[in-house]
Image (cartoon, rainbow, N blue to C red; front, side, top):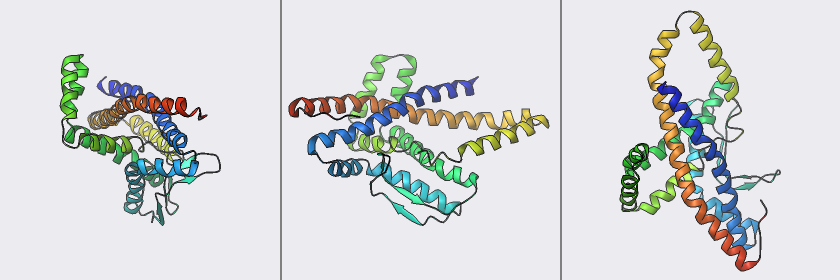
Length: 252
């Protein structure tokens, strides 16, 4: 039951995260386009703002590829407008490997990004008491905890860092390409082991570490959603204000 609760928490955090991350990226570019009326300048400023997160994302790919023997050949954090209209902020070219190693390389930014968010949020900013107060429904304690966080030295710098990392850690379509074959392989292997009578051993061995991993990932997603819910209204107000002053509009 605890594992089911953790998975439910993860799903409830993931759904708004996907929407908010896409909204943030689109409107962050749109804001600079409204200000400078030049898509090239808007792209450069947007990529510079997101650079810490992009560096961690692509650096995670590079590190995982190196450790797994995929021989990374090229590493770039220079933004590029793709033919389908999307923007690629960076990439790592690696040698072709089996789908298991490809899946691990693709998952590296999510793992490293989530770990970074948790370490900074809990270790540096001290969000633990806020989460505990939220779980209890204690709004007063939660407000006091948030106030304490804002008094942390270099609070805004750490907040910006987490914002860029958390909004750059979700895997792209190419990162997820090998996940389905690995999931099917694991499901088949699990089925064979359960059929062979190892089910109880697997449950006892894997439940606790899997629950901890899912809860950690869900916590990172929840922190990201909270940050995006804080920044999104500010971004929307700035965008609307510029639209009203200039009479211009960005179509998304």
